[in-house]
Image (cartoon, rainbow, N blue to C red):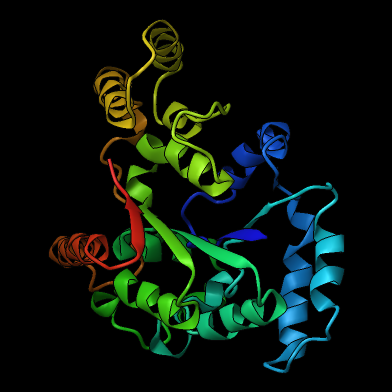
Amino acid sequence: MQIALHIGAHCTDEDRLLKCLLMNKEILSDVGTAVPGPGRYRRLLRETIQTLNGAAPAPDAREVLLDAIVEEDDVDRIIISHESFICVPARIFDGGQLYSQLEFKLSGLRSLFPQDQIEIFLGIRNPATLIADMLGKLEPEQRGSLLGGIDPASIRWSDMIARVQAVLPNAKITAWSNEESPLLWGEIMRKMGGLEPHDPLVETDYMLSKIMLREGTRRFRAFIADNPPKSEAHLRRNMVAFLDKYARADLIDIEQPVELAHWNEAYVQHLTDAYEADITVIEQMQGIDFIAP
């Protein structure tokens, strides 16, 4: 069994990826991929791993879980998506480390599915805008403790990915930059579904449609229908061309509010430069499939 686990990160797609995959549930079922609703596994997996607390599960734990999660027969692959699989938003920087509970949660999952092929999917985001967005989502009394002593300039997604590799050395890891996700959406969906590049799915331009004027979306879809792209690169060139003309003006160059007084423009740029350098590191990591335009 293949288990495709999408672990966020927080404040990236916010369940839009799962929503689009659920819209393709029947298509994916035809190729042996199950997309269970989140209510079938989110609480179940969290509570099971927490209850085990590192202990070995019962011999029949895997079968019991699969019976609860999957309703279809003849399933070869399961898609699980939960941005809070590792922790709730307020604890993302607990202990001064990005997702400090990662090892505990992933090793717990590994113990429950010891013979299955686990694949990890992760959308990353510029820490400058991630932290700003997180602060906006937390209750006022939680904001002061969000960073947990971590220096924002020290945040490296590459370090987190290396920790995933250490816990799950045989797992396939696919990552992408959330900022580029409108151009990558179809490829992300197909890889999560275990599909080939040109296998048909619906809503592969879902995120593009959210940042483009309605007229632009209509024209883009008509153009693609009349001029099927020959490759992902060709498709993305068309996306960029339509965005140049039809991008929503209200979404261009919007600065996210930052509630930390010392975060001036220069500091935000410093964090952004570090993030872009970190992406280069990830692209060069062995065993990582980093999706980029």
